[in-house]
Image (cartoon, rainbow, N blue to C red; front, side):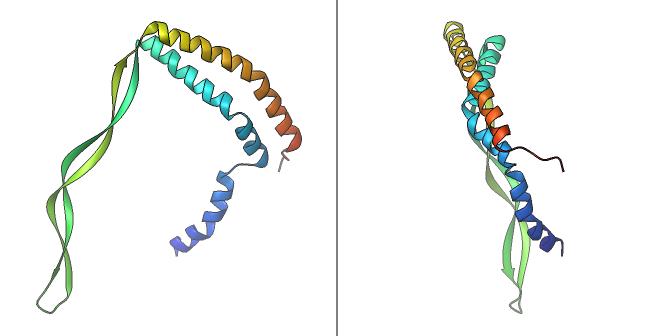
Length: 137
């Protein structure tokens, strides 16, 4: 019963997750500005810490309970569990040294790019609000 309700509500949830036309317009027209802002924040964090963060995938082995299918004397299937080893992947963060001169130059370039994009992004937001006014419901 619950599964049927969930499947019935799934299309509605997907439509709501996509956002309103105004939100989609704003998101589409400000994506570069948001990307530059995100990169600028990352570079500023690197400079403040003195190092950058990188991620790598690490495979490790751990004990788990694995299902095993067996048949009894009457031919009925029985499932039981036994201990087994499985590979599990994790993401590990590690520090990477930075060159402060390069990071400073990168920060300055990103700040300049963000400043140049800010007026375009503001105009795009205003245009999206004019094209797709949201009604109070």
